[in-house]
Image (cartoon, rainbow, N blue to C red; front, side):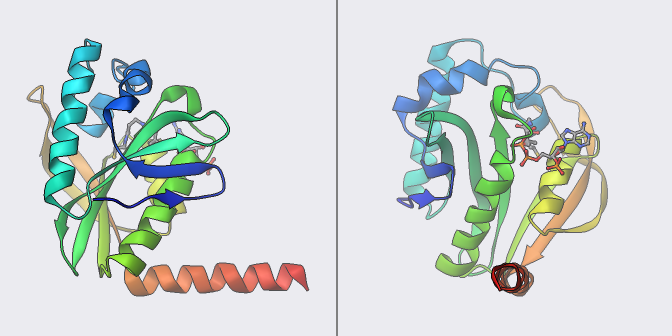
Length: 193
Ligand SMILES: CC(C)(COP(=O)(O)OP(=O)(O)OC[C@H]1O[C@@H](n2cnc3c(N)ncnc32)[C@H](O)[C@@H]1OP(=O)(O)O)[C@@H](O)C(=O)NCCC(=O)NCCS
């Protein structure tokens, strides 16, 4: 995996060991991992080991684990990934951000760029996401990037601590994404005239 994606405020590139310090700034937080399905990290060594596993995964597939770099800070502030990837068909989107930077639109901005990459570069037909039913921030991200709510999956997720959660399922097709871009472009043209 070698994609290097740029947005107005962000760089999105494959995870690397140089990200360990910034990742460990938030990886121990009970506000992050448990909502994304992973156990908070206890030591920097553990974060490095998680990154190594992500990097191994990235060598095996065309997509995988990216980091989100805030350009003006030159700092890694979160992760975003495409997994359960089936070439030319579909993938699942996941993300997690350092709580210091929540609610500033960063994950929405990164996720839109990942959708663009998935649909235009990888030629996917569908990208999906799942979120715990009380994860209001993540639900809102799914809505803001144009995903459709597809339903409630009861007892759908077994977490690392043995707890079972209901999930909301979201999805978007290549055609739906292209329609959104077309509408955004039209609105921009209208506001420029
Ligand atoms: C979910 C998460 C990635 C969102 O990242 P973010 O960069 O803060 O997201 P954005 O700023 O792009 O959008 C967040 C939206 O959720 C809204 N939101 C946040 N908390 C909310 C709450 N408790 N109730 C209602 N809306 C909420 C924000 O207001 C914002 O919507 P708005 O732009 O319409 O105001 C971040 O909270 C996170 O890392 N959480 C822990 C890990 C996680 O849950 N990962 C997802 C697993 S499915």
